[in-house]
Image (tube, rainbow, N blue to C red; front, side):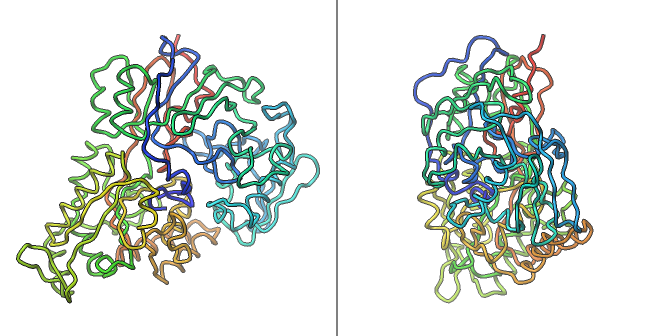
Length: 530
């Protein structure tokens, strides 16, 4: 669940990102013989649909080609980037003033200025721009330049996490203006202020970059960077083992196969990345609240963490992980198969001779889709189906591309994912608010709960942290009482790569784990081991 939010449950990746089909790289990629040479090739599962921030690329930071006004450090704390310092917040949280860094140039040598910031935000907010995530900037009323080095955002309401949104990459007005924002050449040939410059993009195969020699933060030691698009988990592991990749993200059951390899290191990133099942409210079976509550109790989350994740994760009871300060204590649900059966009995779903329940002639069965090539989601889907069958509900598991899945989301369930650690609003609003029902990959279950809607609005409009915590507690309790999804696990991200670099780190990661996540989130700052 992604971008507009969530890939698969919504975001916070765009539909274009999600729609990338299963593919592996053709040919071979030269990576050199040194573990810490001047080139790096990483194997990733997903490919961006665009490289333009105006259409959503890099909106959560670490885009490599671009910089935002702010960035996040290893501890996820906001730090200045194109801004010279953190913003001044005035007018009871409704005005944010940023003073810009001086002496910054774009990769084509043209100077960065306040006009570029104003152009970027105004273009994204323009109704003609097809940016699936523009709703994340809904709080902005005006963005204006004051002098040569200051930009001011005036908000419609006090939106507490607004500064987190300003990691959004800044686009050069001189390069992007005057062309169709949705189809123009800038989408595939971008220019930015970031540490890397795009040198090539073979769709479905790889993106290549070179270090930006004029980068304001200093030229990176890794001079050549390749993002190899390898949708299939098994293929990615095979190519890492063969030496064709320097690093890759892998599911736990494949990552453990490298434990005995002294030339490789494995890094674990904590995440807010959940796996869950959408339960379409329009479905003949999943539309029954009793079925949804029963499934919430029938699933054995601990077994999924132990068996599917090899312990690299946690049980999931909603979008907010149990170890987050925003988690509503007491909303954990037990694994209680007997109670699940009781709920179904009381609602009139009676078991037949084959053990599958029915009510008023409707059999208790539905289809659950998972994206092809995503081994971890497929395993979650099968485990969910197994648990559901024990309660008398038949779940038919199928896999396909996102192009196949998206038109079926109104009626069929999807093994979805999502999560963004920056602020609870970033996940919860897109996932649950009724105004976003089946809006792209937002609110894929078409969930509608007036009390939850009200609490979501309270949470995003309040500037008081305690009031926000109370609002998001209401959201999570409402979701526990009236589930629109069966949340299963929160998944740690495991990365296996060659050694040779000093002090590699990971951030707390969102669901989307592309070039901007993983150990290479700050590849521009890497230093080789001596």
